[in-house]
Image (tube, rainbow, N blue to C red; front, side, top):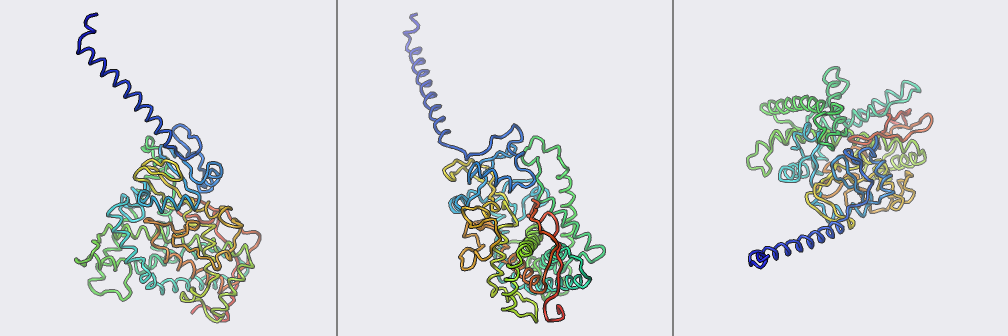
Length: 508
């Protein structure tokens, strides 16, 4: 055994012994670190599907029920995607105040890839220079207070056209009117006139019907849950055929918007419009070599898509929910009508300039958005690096849902949370600008919705016209069933019987 006395062998033993001690200590430290990095509580995931099976057809409601068991910050594994759900103002505030930059990214999805120009629009773009340019375009040029005001005449004209339609329907007798049709037509026409300078009315026998169908399909596909987004190993199967339909729908939309841009370019060669629409504004910027923001056709196409997705269904759903709640609460309807009659009278229709004086009406809109937010989970965010929220470790590449539907119905936040009580906002400082985390209908932080003022202008004016021009009655009980998608509309269209009540003969 003399070889054991060899210096080389002894050195080898010493190094091996030191390596074993080092591995033992680092492994122990690693286990200790992992114990400290606690994930938020949540239900145990199943193999492959994770917690996807728990979401059901109304994910915002399912998540709200799960949050009652697991708490205001909850960890889910949706397929292979790590996900957290925030369900309280305190957690939402910590995320968007302390970690807004970390959660400013958007996760990839089939809808973003196949319909939103491979995430080169504003809403679904990853956080970075492209997104900053698109956001700047919207906030400074397209959806600023000045630009919103410049389209006031469009909103008032379309609201008047809706009132004319309803007045005509009311004269047919005792038949109830499907309110969804005129409200949806109004919001679609407003958005189209803003970006295209014209409407694509469903009264037009060919183009109008085609356009309405195309937009409807876009909105539907943007809101579907694609299983392959959460379980990449089966993405190639294209379960449900959603990916195939998205590609076809995008191709149709892209052809439409290419034609629209070409038409604008051709018209501008002969005469500039006296009432420029948003495509005109963007083309002006594209032609201005000194412009700080370099606008391309891709910018224009992506922003038109965002305006359609963000401005049509969301506003229409909010208007329909406001009328639903007022019809369920006739005394509140009467109070809102009395305010308008006191400030406006009964000899003319409401103008948009009147809205600033209608305090109770604005409370009605806030209360509607509290109970029926158009985006109940907001647009999903994704973390770019690890952070700590609520004392829990959040890994990088974690998807974030903020359940503002649950926050709006939290009994610990709102008194009589499930009741429709607009008066709760009388004298309240709570607004919709994203500073109050108990009411985040338009989101907050870097990825908050830049179209808030436009959306509120449409909703407030249309609700005011509906309840000022008509008395309403319904047969039976008004239901509150909803359906989850890109927005959160009623499951079934709202039907009610209008009766003209102004002293004037009708809309001008």
